[in-house]
Amino acid sequence: MYAIIKHSKFTSWLVFVLMIVITQMLAWKWFDKERCLEKQLVEREVNQIGNLIETTIQNSNSITSVMASMVEHDLLNNHFDLIAEKLLNHNKHIDGIQLVKDMVITHTYPLKGNEQAIGYNLNSDPSHVRELMLSSSLQRLHFEGPFNLRQGGIGFVGRYPILQQDTLWGFAAVIIRKENFIKALGLNQSGISHLFYYQLKKQQEGAKYTPLFADNRTDFSTGVVAEKYNAVGDWIIQVKQKSPEL
Image: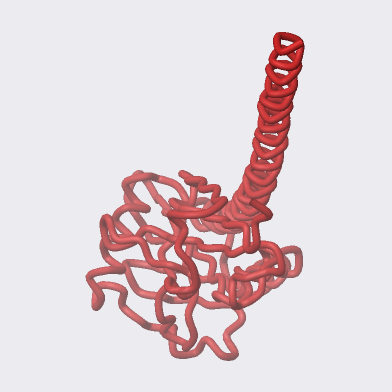
């Protein structure tokens, strides 16, 4: 009788232990699955932001390469304003177009609100010189910013080198104000949505990365975070889940 009771107790304990093990295994699988889903969510978001940045860069590249080609082949003549207007009509997230000759801004469209940029010599600011030389050496569109624009406000300037007879003539440029750039990415000015925190950092002045949003809102080294580097625009994109379930 005692042996039967002892065996029964052993069986009960064994069933109890097995139930705990199975429950813990199921709980871990659920936890792991939910964690993977949250990670996939932020990774999709960071890829979406990256794609929107690339679209903005591609649009900017189209505008500046058209302008550069027209200057290189002496086709622009006195039609800068007309051509710039048509190009901007198809690119609502780009605020202006410029021509820079011998480091001096000679044309800007629209002129209204940008008058102070005309005649500005970029040689007067070493940070501009570095970015211009980088654009020239890369022989492609290169963005500088965010920085304080000559005409007021904060923004980015993308410059495309113009060559005439294998000599650097100057640059065709696009201006994108910070608020318009943020809007192009589907974000608000705080860089916070009901689901995510966002941070975008653009390299300038060598190894320095300048954040687009306030840098003290959250710690992107913890939590459910995804990060992507965009080589075309030299951006670091970070997305963090605001209220993870786990």
